[in-house]
Image 1 (cartoon, helix red, strand yellow):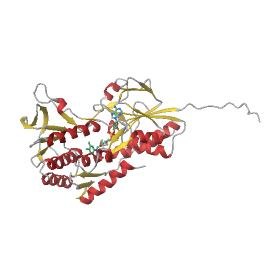
Image 2: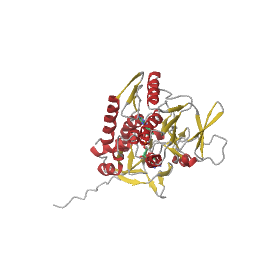
Image 3: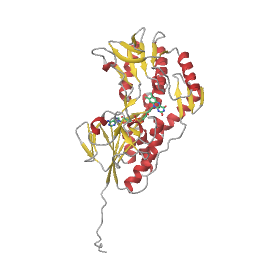
Image 4: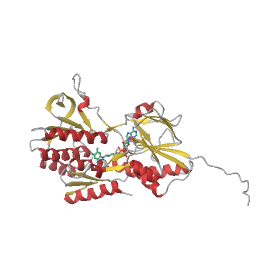
Length: 390
Ligand SMILES: Cc1cc2nc3c(=O)[nH]c(=O)nc-3n(C[C@H](O)[C@H](O)[C@H](O)COP(=O)(O)OP(=O)(O)OC[C@H]3O[C@@H](n4cnc5c(N)ncnc54)[C@H](O)[C@@H]3O)c2cc1C
């Protein structure tokens, strides 16, 4: 039978770019594996083929996990989801021409882009002292995590050759406390003379309830960690300078790790000039739909973004839950730009499980806090479920 001459309308594929392999995009890849998006050409650009899961990083430092236990294979997940994978750091987005530039000087065009690159460690505290030639490179930043894991291995190698190794961790949040406890367990395993210090400014764990804070301080004491309530201001030639009420002190330290909160990702500085709205040192400004307030085809979620309508902390919990809403919105927007999108409404209370270095953990949920080895096993169960989810 002759084929009728019916004109076939070929729909062009819509180009979706996913930038960064943070918590939200990992969730989206898992979804796409079950239900691929038809009529879409999806590419994920990330600087590493594997993402390290921050929640299990202290467990790896303390020796409870090997590196493979805490890594998620992004390249493999992309393949399973029918998503192209490009391993490159992005350096800039030009929202006017709808292009993302990568470090290898390539331009990647998009119709819709989703940003989930996380943030950088805030190093603004460094070099506040009146010192010349401060040794900025010798401070180990917790982010990016893939650099940190190499640097931590070097810390351990140096500590193996030393009879008295001193390490300072700067920070006052839950991440800094998990790191300090994991580091103390790891270093004392090498030599009982090795010592870890926590330099935390005036307040430890601001925003957490008093009971939880007391429990944490007890665990820091139990592990023999020295807590110094002063602000670190510089690190130079192996000397850490701190300050309290303008009174400076110095401490000899073999290494210093900064877990000093987050600041906007460096690439957003060049993006700001191309008019995507940012706030507070380079965070992408988003509304409750996780959509850029300046460009409706730009979505951003996790630590790279800041909500302009309400205070939402930069945390893994919100990257995951906000990410699920952002994924729904992205998929809806790809199909029909006029369809209504959902808002991400964070819960009033979030569960935080803080590991204490030696298979012990403390839980915080609103005003409730609990602790024990069972909390550590609960944390391990939740973390492994995230890393190994299909
Ligand atoms: C030790 C530690 C423990 C923590 N524990 C917890 C916890 O228990 N609970 C909790 O809620 N929060 C925790 N946090 C905070 C949590 O890690 C972050 O809030 C969370 O990782 C943010 O997730 P994200 O999806 O925004 O990005 P990230 O997880 O930071 O992922 C960003 C991704 O983007 C990639 N990328 C970065 N820059 C570029 C670029 N220029 N181009 C391309 N790709 C790029 C990175 O390689 C990475 O794959 C912890 C943090 C630390 C440091």
